[in-house]
Image 1 (cartoon, helix red, strand yellow):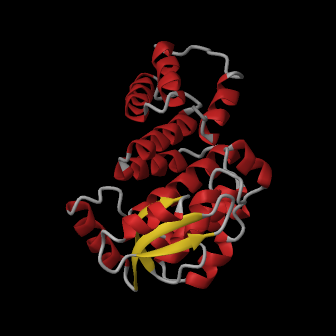
Image 2: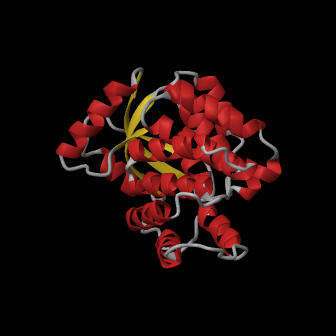
Amino acid sequence: MRRTAWAAALLLAASCEPARGVRNESLLATADDFFLRERYAEAAGHYEAFLSENSDTPRRAELLTRVGKCHLGAGAVDRAVASLDRALAAQPPAVVKVDATFRLGVARRMLGDVPKALEAFRATAAAPIGDRDGAGITSDELAYETAQAQFRAGDWNAGQAELAKVGASGPFGAKARARLGLKGFIVQIGAFADEGQARSAAAKVAEASVRLAPGSPPLHVVSVGPYARYENALAEAERLKASGFRDAFVLP
């Protein structure tokens, strides 16, 4: 399993953390183990239990940030926002502040709070690159998330400019190239390396089209749209899911 950048940063930090006067340290060790195995809901519960017994820990902001990231990974976005807000209120050190700020931007974007998401991404971009590296935030991830927020804001030109910064061979490359060139919201039904499979899938949906997403290998994206409003695209995605196309989702 490929570890996330968050997990790599956690491993580095954990290897340098001696325990002094820590109560029930096994909770923290278990939380870290769940985090690294991407069992985020269980990790969050153990981090929160550890914090309840060690409310005076100097690592409070760092651990609240991990709780927020766990909730984000588990899809509990509202809870992620609450934890990350608490982390930022706890006067975190620079690296933790950058980490919490960026993940809060991702959560805000997922909730549709685009102005606050963009504010968070601008703050992340303005932070020293060493702090971003320490937080496991790559330039590709920052550009991709910023583009997503700009698209939601209706600024397609700025979003495409950010998307063009994402490296084609990196972990965000495939996601980025499926979105390159879009000027409106679409509902993606599937993406195929084989054009024949894409054409076959498109034939099952009225008004579906096949779009070539450049790259190596190129992808044949089957979608319907575009839609000027996100809400309209979301309604169509839900209709398609109810019709049996369970993987339908809105791009960008």
